[in-house]
Image 1 (spheres, rainbow, N blue to C red):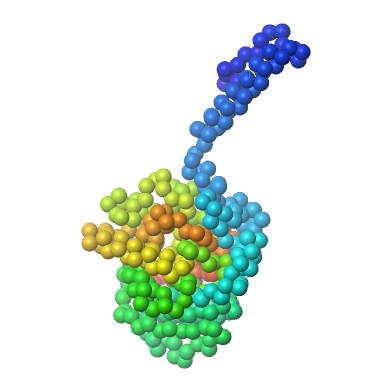
Image 2 (spheres, one colour; image 1 turned 120 degrees about the horizontal axis):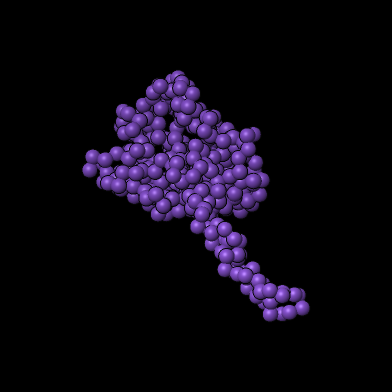
Length: 343
């Protein structure tokens, strides 16, 4: 195929003749437009989006100088050691933000509770006011109580036991909405919900604060959109069309302003209830509804896989492991087998 299919230079062209020079300029412009049009139509839109929102990966892991620090809608994409994160920490340093960390520990998952709280005391929002909200069916797991630092408090909220991790996952949004509305909203400015089978491994500071914060799922970071485990049952209210979505978010760590997280939890809880009434259960349970919500309400702060990481062949190395998923680590190595005591 000719590069310039619509142009032919006149015979007798010379640089002293302005008319042929003008014709040449028009031909070059037409050829450039044609080339760009062909390139655009031949590109895979999903791959293009993935490259824009993804990362250049090396065998040794991710290079902090190569990763994007903004989303396509201009929200910060947070890597803890990036210049933008340093700036965000400086910005929030003088605001005196009060933050709650909501933890649901039910049944065998209580096994992880002391480990998570101890790591939070070492790394989570140090020198800031933090309240740990622990929803548990085994309050005595916290006896003796953890020795908390200055400006740290613990609230233990007894809840009924919910056997089965799937029931637990589908119930958490409703519990979180009730707790925020009745208590958390009166005591703190921000609230973050975290899976109990995780631990903080490095400092997690005010760079995570935002009106609505979501965390990228490490297994799908930098992958094309068609690989995301979005809900594909069109009857489910969590259904996501093939053309929808920017990233795939993890349900293990999310949060933001109390009012924003309350709205999200209430909506997701309602969607879950609507599907349950129809006898439908989304493929990824709570995570499916969370991703549906975050497509309609894009987060104002997106955390990189540093904030939800575990060692697995499908998970890229990150510059700093800030929040590690012990539960998913156990599943990836085959040690979990439904028994939390195995890890």
